[in-house]
Length: 413
Image (tube, rainbow, N blue to C red; front, top):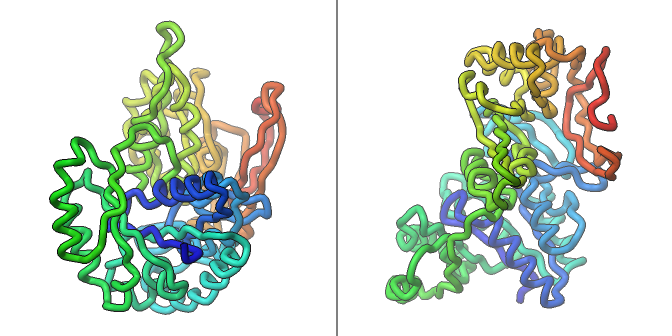
């Protein structure tokens, strides 16, 4: 191969992340030293590398598929949405500030092309092949001038492009043809062919369309992948899609006996690292559901308030929907409530935030004897310890610093 490949998609959630991981694992099984790469990622699902850099979880998953240690080189630009119009920009694993979408696409993104191509070249000098993942669609012609993640990186590296289409949502032939037709002649010359993803049924019925597509574009379709349920692989493009794919379609063993545990996860705004609950969903006899109404907590054995990129916003949302009162009542009754990261912060006495929301001092739910102060420097770490007598390791990603003023240690601390 040419030393690399760009996996692009006709749409978001076409399956680029999974296909990239699959190609990485296929190559490494054949003795090829391979690494994943995504120049720019927009995701609230992030991972901390061993050197303390924050990257998208999908790239960490792809590195695992390639049997290599993930690094910031594999995802040099990470955008973490804080609202509909702005995101925190994480460059080479470290936050460098908040920026509006207009400001980013208006010049900052194009200026980062040198950084991402340098990272790609470093990977190419170390590995036999680099499998790049695109973002959204390469035919977003309104953004082509400043593109650094789709055809921009493919043209800079002279990589062939494999376009993945999701046939499950329909219109895959039009999507392939339209995507190719909207590209410039130079970009079109890099499109090697297509891959049909999420197919259900008899593939022989698809073949006439594939032949016609070849006749129209001169490009072959390299494969048809079946729809696979319960993969449980980290995704990133859409929160609701990821919740559906990772939790509600998980394939697990039947429960032990007749007992079933019900876990309710409050679907707070800007939920981050929602894959934290995947481990519970994978347990036999555990049902995990995401809720946004107080009455949905009534029959839950455990309620989780998850992490979020907007702690103060999440606190206001819990109060608006009556969930805050329900959580306080539940805790007073001695029924389990688990707060993770930002969810832990909202359960405290107060939050002092001059960084994320700039709201100043805000009263928390008062369930825990904890006071939170947001620090300007983000904590990024990979702590190790023990729990219930077993060694464990995890990650830390937070601006909040907890001042714990009582209570009992959780597990082994």
